[in-house]
Image (cartoon, rainbow over all chains, first blue to last red; front, side):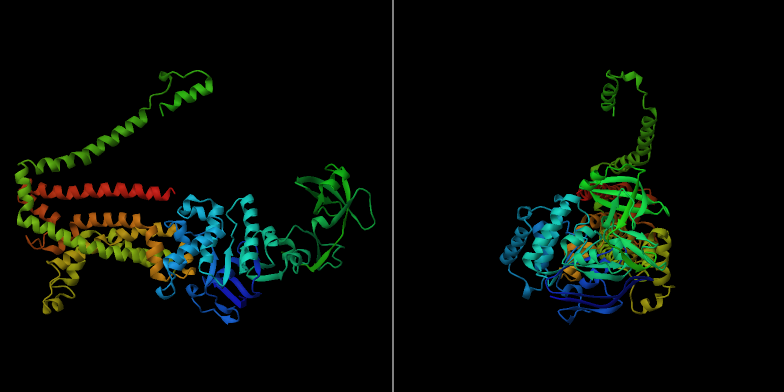
Length: 335
Length: 291
């Protein structure tokens, strides 16, 4: 099932949450909506689901206009950030809910409901929890139950709002790999919202970067990381240094350089600039250096491998020489 | 407290702190004593007095006073008024709380203010309002008389007044509870294909069932105990338009103290039962929240 978002605008009072958004999602794709909080990514997901009505624009599922289709009839699976499990129902009943509320004519028989629910619980590897209640489950388990419940109605698309937002780091990592595998197995067009770039880059086929109610860039994880289309994408995905000097060529431009794309030398070099080391932070296998440029005092961030750093053998206060390997120049605008 | 402190002292200093070194907790003791004396004077003594007075002339007199036709009719009318007012306010309260907590619409704050109105208006005034509208000299009085409908000094007036004064209880109880629970579960139900009724029955109401029960108990207690508003519209016609509280007042004014207290003891019993259920419901609610 493909999804098309055509020129969608959504306002809350005077606040413009979505501003002329266009997006096309291919059948079977797993797409991440990535952006800072308040960027409109969740609103976009809710408009696709039918939980919000756009002020203008259309939503198409498989080239069919669903803008005015009620959320009940849209046949989407939606996983809420805080799971929104029905707290007074058992896990079994939570998953069965979507089947039980169907009109009598299309409602499966009790034995069929039982079979389907248990099948889904097995799919999320939690069939042994069928009789428990939501409050007896851990966050990660609740999230998987929420997913099973969303899948029970055999949705045409699966929408997930910050699916791992409320989980701790380790569970997050496990769950997102699991989601990726699950998606590859069931091959359902899926869209998830996240503010975590690592999550988006790791899980998604394509990443949609959203900011101020507009789409900044759509591309594969490699494309948005290696070839950011706008200064915002450069800054939001990964760390970046911004220079406004000879590197940019023109005073109306700014140059963007990733911290790991800067070479560092102990001896002066013709095209390198001078900087003093402020401090170094070791993060696992990486070392992040903060340096102050000698000419204008601007701070520069550089990332090195642990080996390279140990090889350099530098102390804070030491003067070093920096040379960017790759520079991207944009017309300057305060981001 | 007393059991914990010495242990803590021993841990800190390696030796037990002797009990006399601890200051005697005068202030807490004093405050507790004041509270208990206050409760005894203003709650327990009157409560005991009601039953003592009621049984002063013996159990036979007590049961005769309750079985007396006028008392019996007062009991019946009280039950009828509550039986109409409570279900109506239950339906209204749930509907209002649902609308306020789960939807955004124009005039929402006005609705919330209106729900509180019976709390802020004196019951006597609310009774008078009905007299001004439905009474013989009132706006609808002549029309009602033409069609031979009696509202004031009749059962309909009493029911109306009871509905008015007990109107906020269920809604007031449910609104904060439903607001705290948010809208996500309702949205989840909608996405799963549930229509409005299914969502209300299977998702919203089960989540607030103890709140509903709590509201109904308070509403019922007030409906049966209401005096002011009902007194204005009732006309005090013995055996016809007297509710239990009004009947107690009449008996008392006639110096028939034992009978007055006998009937009053019924209301006290109602209050005690209400309290017991309330404690039970609150405990259940806490249990559910602590999940």
